[in-house]
Image (cartoon, rainbow, N blue to C red; front, side, top):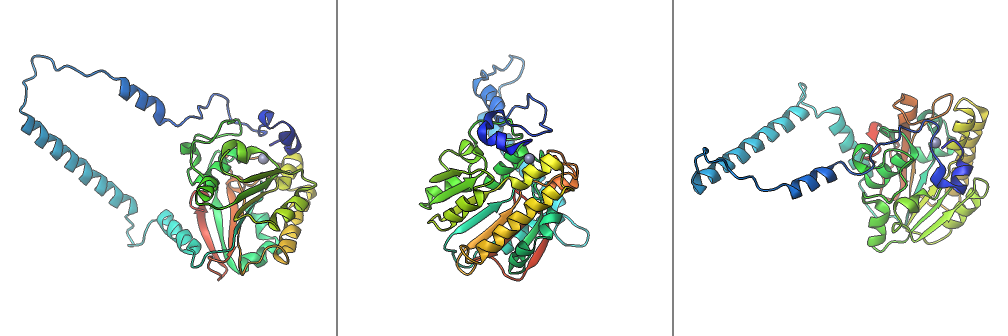
Length: 330
Ligand SMILES: [Zn+2]
C-alpha cells in the first residue's frame, strides 16, 4: 500500500511498495494434484506378477494402515515431547489464547478495530488502548509471512495461514476460497458490517457483509462512529491512516506517531461513549507493523510483530499479556 488514497480510487492497481514477485499461483496447491489423480487410468498388472488372493491383499492393506497409524502417533508424540515434561511453546501459547478468549457470556455485539500497519511497540504506548488492555487481554502476535495486508486479512478472517489460504500478496484480486468469520456470522443470522478505507473486504468475501461503507481517511472517524451507533452484531472498523503514514514517511516520522495518536483518541472517545465494555466485546488488531524507514511484506521482527487486544464481555479481565501468539490463533 504505497498510497492508500490511490487504493481507494483504484484498488485493482494497488500494490505494496515491496510487492512480491509476480507469478505466485494464488490457487490452493492441492487442486492440480487432485485433478491428476482423478484422471489417472487404471494400471494393468504385468503377467509375471502372481495374482494374490483377495483376502491376502486385504490383510496386507490392513497391516499397512496400522503401520502408518503407529508412525503418525509416534511423530505427534515426538513433536510435543519436551524433556522437562511441559508442552512445547507453540502448544502452550495456543492453549493460553484459547483460555483467554473463552466466552463466559455473550456480548451484545463484537467490534473489531483493525489498525492497518500498527507496530506492536507503538500500540504498547497508546494510552486509551492501555486502559482497554488493563481490563482485558493482550497478546504479542506474529502475523506470519508474507506480511502484506490482503494476505493478513485472510489469516485474521479465516484462521488459515498465508501458505494455505491462497492469498499471499496484495496482487490477489479474486474472491477468497477460505471461509471467514464474516460469512459464518451472517450464516448464523447476525448482522455484519464493515467501515473501511479499502474495498478489499467485500472483494474477498462478497457474501460476508450486510453493509459495507468505504470511507476516506478524513471521514472515517465520523462514519465509524455512526456505525457504532447502529445495530451491527459484528462490526469491522478498518482505518489505514497509520499504514499510509508508514509508507509515506516511515515509522520513525512524526506523521506515523500522529496517525497512531489519532487512533488512540478515537478509542478514547468510543470507549467513553459508543462502546460499552460492560455489554460489548472489543478486539483491536493489526495486520502487520512497519519498518523504521517504512514498508512491510517481509519477515522483519518489527513488521511481523503486532499487538492484539481483547476486552469486554466474554473476555478475561485481568490484564494479562500473552507473550507469544499468532494471527491464525487470534
Ligand atoms: Zn501497507
